[in-house]
Image (tube, rainbow, N blue to C red; front, side, top):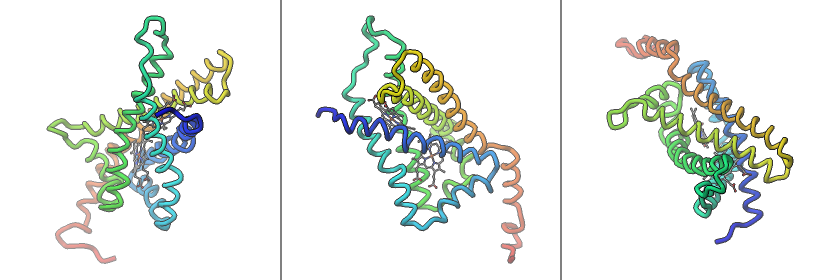
Length: 238
Ligand code: HEM
Ligand code: HEM
């Protein structure tokens, strides 16, 4: 099968809008974890309060359909492309960056399959309270896998950093592909912007994850757990 010009352009565009935009706003809202359970759960409750038909329509148009298209077409492009930095004549730094973008695309794909199943789908199946609200995260991220703790946290950090790299390098490539940066000087400037984006977006995700381990909220939850509402006297009637 040959690549199609229009589909390739659409693939390129969806990487920036809506997926890139979604990534940045999603990680920004996830940093509400720093504000504790009330703030973080407030974001989930905000979306949950919308009528179901509107939620489904909004998510389908804003993220699910573009992401499925971008991922499937991206995997198709990846399996067609060949590494081009193994030839001595092509051992340019850019070629390594380019290969790394394809590798991070595959990591993003695997991460998102796991992540969307365990958050979005499990959230709807078992309820947000039991799956994606603040108090679940520290336990989920630290739970041992084959006896090794914090494997899930490592998976999340790898997933976040891979998405941040893929997106940031993508901005640089996008600007060249769409004729926005033509001169070498302009391309060097966007390379600096892309590096800053990579660091900034990675930090957003990592800080959001660390917010779930804030000892202040861990202990306040412990106090809550011992509160009269769950004590031996039984639930408190308000
Ligand atoms: C700091 C790490 C992250 C945390 C704590 C996190 C948290 C969440 C939560 C709680 C949900 C469920 C939302 C809901 O159903 O109300 C979700 C869904 C989702 N996340 Fe993340 N996420 C993280 C990283 C990422 C990354 C790096 C991406 C890459 C683009 C991503 C993409 C998605 C997508 C596409 C959905 C499904 C959207 C939906 O159905 O609402 N997430 N995430
Ligand atoms: C889900 C798995 C994903 C796969 C398999 C994938 C694959 C790819 C591939 C192969 C390219 C290079 C296209 C080319 O050079 O011709 C690409 C470009 C791009 N991707 Fe992804 N991607 C994925 C997820 C994401 C995510 C989550 C984002 C944003 C957060 C994203 C943003 C971009 C951007 C901005 C570009 C650059 C567009 C351009 O080259 O003009 N991708 N993707």
